[in-house]
Image 1 (cartoon, rainbow, N blue to C red):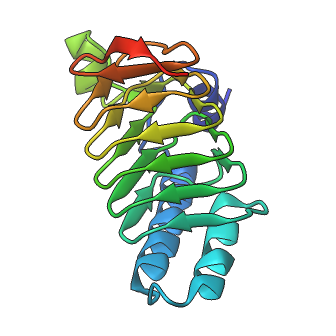
Image 2 (image 1 turned 180 degrees about the vertical axis):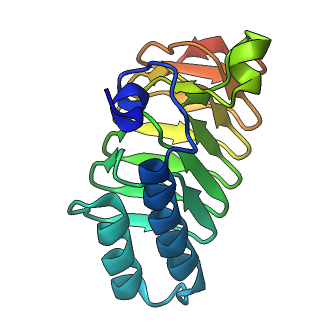
Length: 184
């Protein structure tokens, strides 16, 4: 099994594997290119995002600066907006539904470090996928941790750290994020 196959199946893997480094370098170069494009030049931004995500995107606006690990593990549906300083660590699949909006300084992190010091000191990591369903608003400075699914019609309050799954139709806030109330 390759290191990339291990990565995509949630097993411990070595992120310094040559093939993975090459793919991250490609994503870094495309993110750097994207972040230098003037905001008014949405057409050129789309062209770079299409290369980065390796798929067609529709009505996607990501304000610079934006960084991701690979890009090819990110799937974004129609009508997505992210304010400045979005970071997506996509060692696992990141699936974002339609009508999702994010405030500034948000992080979506699929990568985890082992609790076992020997594995950690070897540089091994693992990852878990993240899903954000339709019609979600995510406030500024929110962190979404590995393995989380955020349901439809959810509001995540600014500054929250989402550590576990969030059901549909709720507002969550805090660190760790907890349900504050229903969202109708």
